[in-house]
Length: 184
Image 1 (tube, one colour):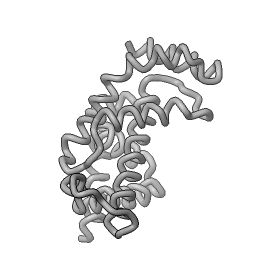
Image 2 (cartoon, helix red, strand yellow):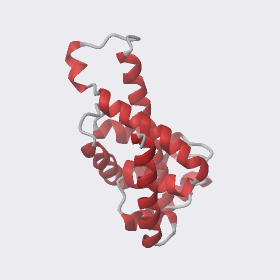
Image 3 (tube, helix red, strand yellow):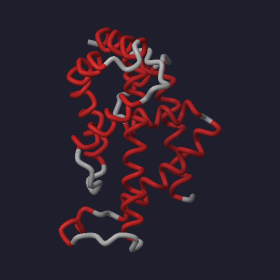
Image 4 (cartoon, one colour):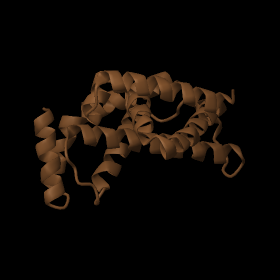
């Protein structure tokens, strides 16, 4: 499966978005993208985006990329994790503007809006942006583990580093983020 994804990504890169290759790619990566999206959304119960919506939006954004030289399956899922992060942050910002009175919220939708999760996601995004400025590798590890739901071993495989390095960097990044977000 991994080599099939890599071959299709190569076909897409070399033929300016080959539609047939894109059509073949979706069924192969769909369940993995759902697993990644689901792992994050299961931790964040109050997020009002559904797994299917997140997967479809992420896949759409990935396939619309024209400047990416797709290399392999790992790179694809790393970029998918970044896309999911951006989608979730955009949704949180949108809900935040709705809560400020920019747009009226129908009564039926009110229970799905969570101030706490929105604040948490926006604070985390701000901290990750800061982290990426001085340690982009730790930021990528957090994106893959937190937003992408990858294991230590999967993250190591994607980044081509040892699991021990991922564990060490993940631990340091989490400690820094906790301090930064909680204001300690």
